[in-house]
Image 1 (cartoon, one colour):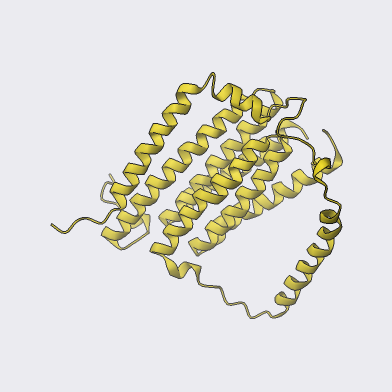
Image 2: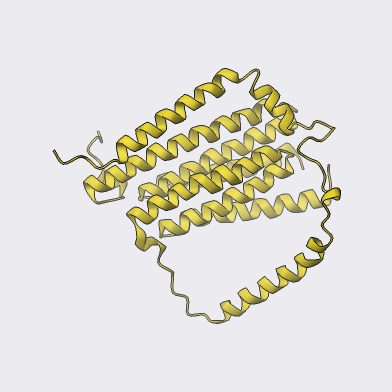
Amino acid sequence: MESALDTALFYLFAVVAMAAAVNVLLQRRVFYSALSLIVCLTSVAGVYMLLQSPFIATVQVIVYAGAIMVLFLFVIMLLDPFSAEAARDKRRYLNYVAVLLGLAILIFLYPLLNAYELAHVPRLLDSAAGGVGSVRRLAAVLFDEYLLPFELTSVLILVAIVGAVVLARRQAKA
Amino acid sequence: MGLHHYLILSALLFAVGAAGVIVKKNIIAIFLCIELMLNAANLSFVAFSRYLDQVHGQIFVFFVMVVAAAEAAVGLAITITLYRNRRTLNVDDADLMKW
């Protein structure tokens, strides 16, 4: 598992995550902070993959970077829509740089996608090695040892839903 | 790649989140920084889970994510209520319960 690629990827994800995290603080407009946090959460999902935890990485992207952050963006757009206004940038050359970078990624990805074959994809999810992160092992422990806490979280979420609806509902004019 | 690499990254992310909670004035920005701190803690859990070869750390991350989702839903509902009553997102303007 130890390889130069692992190390390189770790530093890549770590630098991106840290830069995005610092950017969350530096942005004046909260909308951009939220977008930056999404970048940070996605990079941390990459680190989870390096830690051989594909399930947690997937949940991180779908639930955290997906659902929770969309909720945040909804509320930001509801309460503070002007924070999403584009910062005017007069530097035209940035457009050309963006196009060039996009083309470079396309050229870089094309041979990879062309060589993609499903049969060659490593079956991480139920690898015979039974790594710590394998979904099967995770589920076995979750639904055996942690069954009661798992059921309790459903009650917690129900309470949260009811609480959110009650709090955010407009007061009836009485 | 030793365990300490991941722990240092986690600590740095947590520190940035904590700094944000202290520095930021916008209540939604503070929320985002809290999410950042939760995320840093999750990273530690997963790193320990990997290096101690125990699956329990990942179960904890699972529960932290559930609680974070619930917390975000309720917290944002409170934010909406605050904005409706006070017309502000600045935490310094919501000091009614301040000692």
